[in-house]
Length: 120
Image (cartoon, rainbow, N blue to C red; front, top):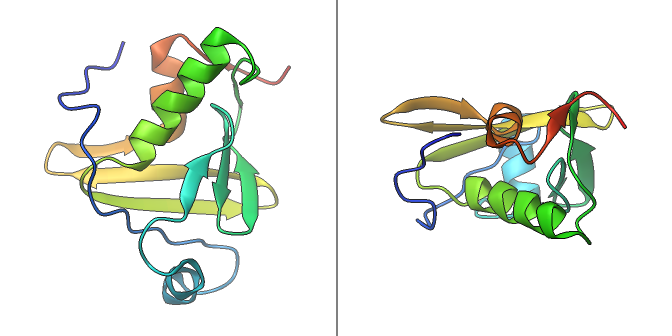
């Protein structure tokens, strides 16, 4: 299980959407701050776009474990540091960079045990 030092820390979220547009264009479309949220544990909404984490399946958000997975994904998206989300063709991932290194949302979701590798 991943050890988050401060799982409820809220910081500035800088998001870039890479779907052929430059990162700056993606930032201006989203208003630069915020914009990313978890629709479920493995589906992320970024502005008008929604993408799934590659090879990650989480329980339905209507279930207890599904709500926990969605909450964890949202906590990850709001962590202090720099957040970058990339997507293409409905699949993508988010990367959090801080002084402790870089973490991928897909890896965090699999490490928790709430989600599993592969498709349903």
